[in-house]
Image (tube, rainbow, N blue to C red):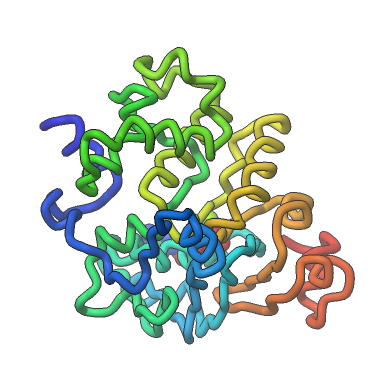
Length: 295
Ligand code: ADP
Ligand code: MG
């Protein structure tokens, strides 16, 4: 198996590369015009993600119950709630990873702008490109160099060879990692520190120019300094990429998120401005959770 095939497997994308190159519906892609003006339009025109009565099941067990929630473009939305309340399941529905689990299914809709991401004519590989994901434990492709980790998704989605170097550098810059790795691009990605590996995974996700970045407890394996770097990055990135971040750390939600959603036992209890969730929530259960009475 080639490195790229390995990468494809690790990204849990079952379709071959030819499928990956299939064009994403043109309505969601906006290119910069010759004067660069289009780039600004793109910055404000990123679509929101909207969950509409989302239910998610593992066999008979319902992990997400009738959740309707909008992730506003240009903002970071935090998802908080006790362990097992369905946070990871909910975000895995957004990039269609949930359906890969045998017996798992969803009801309801996940809309990106006006596209139903679970629609019959929507290619799962295209969804994974438009909706990037960063996991709890940094997971660079173990056999690949720093460079190839970032280039993997680009090659997989058919980016012309001549563009790859610049795109890799741009993604590493966007992830705040370029200066630390520019002299070791050929070395294994797994040789980096934990925080650098997580930023490498963010660069890998950003390289294909996603509209949405899902982050499932992205700092829980990192030290406080590395955590701060990621939080600073989120503040920059959210202007271009709609961000959903699951976090156990309420201070982190308060620092990075414009709005916060509180989940309990698969249900969305409330979603409001972060400040309000932490100081004056409407639901007693939210109040009890944020003041540490359970969870
Ligand atoms: P959280 O991320 O909030 O901790 P999860 O989404 O991981 O919660 O889990 C929500 C519920 O779904 C839990 O009851 C959990 O046991 C169940 N669950 C999660 N993953 C699976 C799976 N692969 N198979 C069966 N049940 C699962
Ligand atoms: Mg989880």
